[in-house]
Image 1 (cartoon, rainbow, N blue to C red):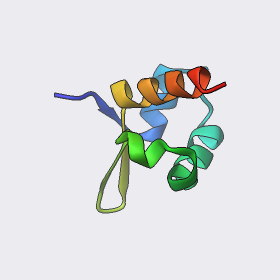
Image 2 (cartoon, rainbow, N blue to C red):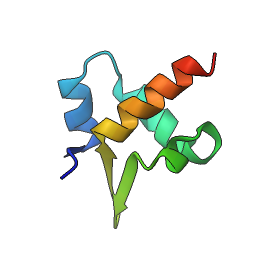
Image 3 (cartoon, rainbow, N blue to C red):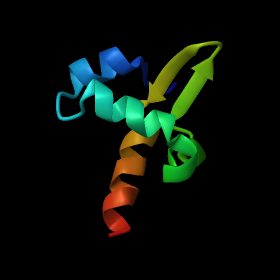
Image 4 (cartoon, rainbow, N blue to C red):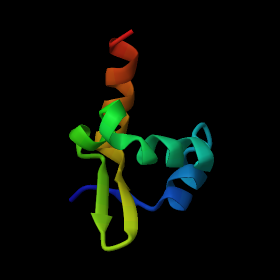
Length: 65
């Protein structure tokens, strides 16, 4: 079962990521590849982050440079 976190929980557990930065990535998820990665899970209005897929996306961003 994947570990899912809200934006607030995620930033509390991973202080290297700010709430504003994370929300900006989520807002632009269709242009930055985050949506394609499957890291963002939406249930109604609730936005959850699949941590394993999110960190895989982060690593892919580093590899792309």
